[in-house]
View 1 (cartoon, one colour):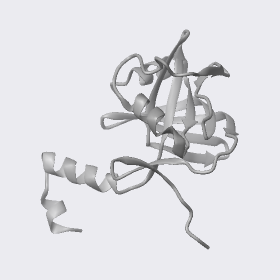
View 2 (cartoon, rainbow, N blue to C red; view 1 turned 60 degrees about the horizontal axis):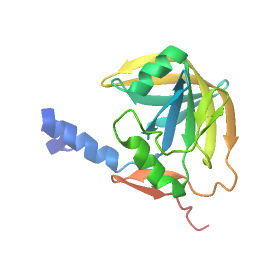
View 3 (cartoon, rainbow, N blue to C red; view 1 turned 180 degrees about the vertical axis):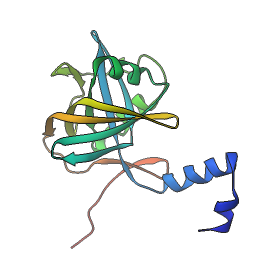
Length: 170
């Protein structure tokens, strides 16, 4: 363990953690849900496969998020996995505010907001919510999963910017 990292506390420790996590490449997705007919969504990079039997995913949402409140009521959410061509869409859903869907095309898919031309789509039902610091971790069963057409490169987040994965030459 680095001596300088182990002696840090408070704001310095929080910044060191942010810097380390910025060095980890993460997938980018927009998690969505409906409240009546109103769509809600937010960009996440804390999204992973959790289990194959049964198929499950893990998504982490800020505890203050409007979307989290909607998901807690409905018990369902959609995951729009973004492709490399979706950096603007990821930025639009990453901002704060209630009107993230203004000017954004979407369609209902199994009662959940689905963004067009996504790299992949997952619909999920929440099994459990776990409080984890300033976030809530959703453990959810996958009820639908589809790979988008022409999905070549996923959108990733690394070193505080969007990018894309490129396979190494064999």
